[in-house]
Image 1 (cartoon, rainbow, N blue to C red):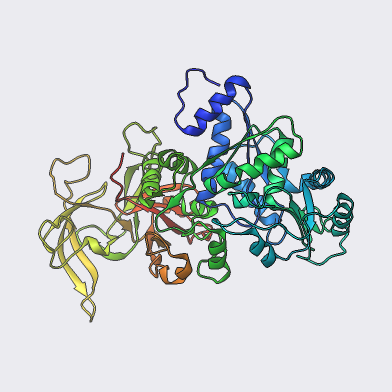
Image 2 (cartoon, one colour):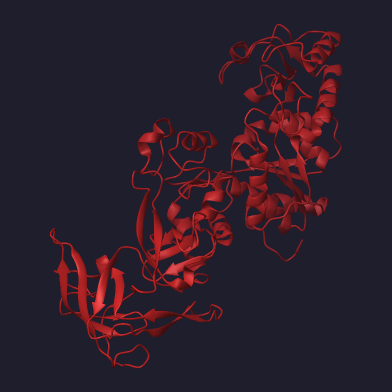
Length: 547
């Protein structure tokens, strides 16, 4: 660890305190492979990996696969891809199921020392016996079974003699504890389900609160960093480590989860939206999953920047989604090539330009002060062009500096033009604009100024493209999950068709572009040769006013 580094949050302070006595830091990132990682999981990922890096330690990737009901290899591979895309690398890759034998042996150990027993109460009865926050619980009628009977029943559970839910193995702690988690919690349950790693070897599975501290201790994890809801589980975590006899005890530290406006970060509801077809899949660019953000064009470094700004705190808070968009916009401003695209086209004809004559117009790829020189590319300028429909108004308001009848604008990188007329259809919609250019007004060669500059695309050379314009998936700032379908934004995606430069006709997904005056875009996976599809990553306008 850099001794001159300054701790910036309470987790670093705790780790630095421990590091002084025992200079080893090992963390773990333990996702459950029952869905795709969302931005909330990414905060935990960032905390686990960055804290290890901060102190020169290591971080394991451990899949919490103690519940085979909804877990799948598909999610395992997706999580690995997401972690690497974020720029992190694990020290070891482990599975909770790697420790099933050890968990079973330690459960037997607890039975033998009188610290665990087999209980026949069903789920509802256990809840009734547990008591409430203001009333103590009652001992299970099976709490005083002999060690021999408990061992026999536990082995029979393991051998598949009982149906799901018939019996559980429970810790024998204190049914009057003020912490409900310590009132004889379940350590094992019966579940006759095939496991994606262990097959049909087991029909009993350890509970998370039992398996997790064992896994941490066996891997040599020094600091078990987890979200705030596990704070009440910390006494149980420590109890398991103590009762199982581990010499070195991991330290559990809790931090607040990440909450963002206009977003749901519950796998249950995200899965529901996927399964019911509300969204197109886990990687639908409106989703808060990491694969969706990647598809939409969010850079990994921008997400890290957002997490750093959101910070690590002990109290829950809600971060405005505009902060994330601000971080994305800042990153793309110095990394995205500048190109021209027209998303809602209307044709413009320059009547005094000769038919069939074209001129190369040079555009800087990345004209940002301080950014590396990324060269330039050329676009063809000719008689017939496309411009944005809202860049022309027949009866414009005051201070409208785009094109209007008898008005002038500069075409980006090219010439000043003057509107000489327009044509409309039977409904009054403008379908064609006529203009003349000033041959002496080429960009870089003319000192004459006009107030407006608009972008364009060559009607002859531009490539037809589809643009997917995204807005927040939910209309509510704080989403009421009980009425989640009512909060869906019906305008969360809009498909429009226009034109792009040939320069990006074969753009690869993940490469960012700034469509000049329009927004930041990246090619979607649905792109085909000659038929590009672009996702709007974020608009040009920044609504975030913070630092």
